[in-house]
Length: 152
Image 1: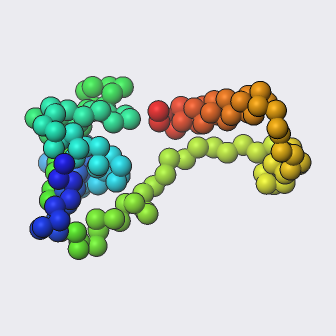
Image 2: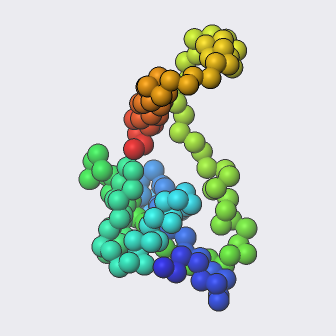
């Protein structure tokens, strides 16, 4: 895979057209960069000459150069690949400035840390069955949060 070409110091960057109506020509084109992990997945599939790649919420069809919403296949946007110089200061811009999905946090107390300490009481549990149950509950909680954020 040639995600990054060390000889030419370049990298493939994938973007999607983020205009409110991506098919209208009534405003200047606005393109948003996919996250680093999405970019890696997309480029890897592209390098393997796949016709399309699946991400969390959409497909990207390389032949038509479009992004297709999984929930509503009629919602489509243009997608494009651009080779950029590694020295370009904007390449890593979204890694640290990417807007995170917002999930409402509901605490049982005003101080979540104090509640955690109170509930755990610093006890180390040596019973494997209890540990397994706690791990299962933690995993279930992560799955529930992922579902709330529409992530797998």
